Image (tube, rainbow, N blue to C red; front, side, top):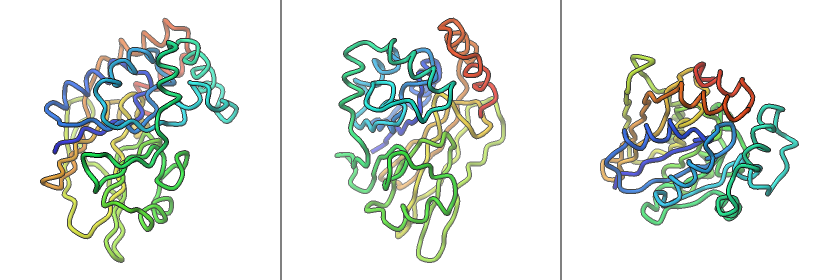
Length: 251
């Protein structure tokens, strides 16, 4: 089985279309949340993902943008985007976001994997360092946990007393590229596919992961997309200019 894992699309339709085109062929799609917020195409993104994804896990922006929780904890730019998104979403998409499952979720297709947004221990927790990863790796009930939230592609692994941070290695900053790793027997992995719509690892390209359950292989990917069109949508919608500028910066 080949699973496409996406996270943090954030209303970026152009990036999502580029990822879906580059990922073919795949058998299932697992969505780790934050489909909306920041970007200017929330309905288009939800309408595209809903019929495709076998797993959907809510993110903190999904939760705020559909009105389940307050935007008080967001910075002013994120809060403005969340309020705009809430007003822009159709009633059907608002309701769908409200009903989205909170992680962890174990896909029916693959009992060795778990899908979360932030952490298997707390949906809002950021896993950015080995210190953050220690407790989740110790308490994981599956071989692999796919997580997002940080917008940083990579992850963490553990086997016995050996602990490693996973850092992808690419040669360029503008072309489509992939980087693969095996999942050896007896290891546990936290795998972050990175952000489709708003990367924050200083690489502007859309990020995603392919998981081959037979080969026990993870393939990290980066693909370019129509950045100018995505930025134009943000500016035309009257959203904060910073949201458009940071797409080019990848941070």
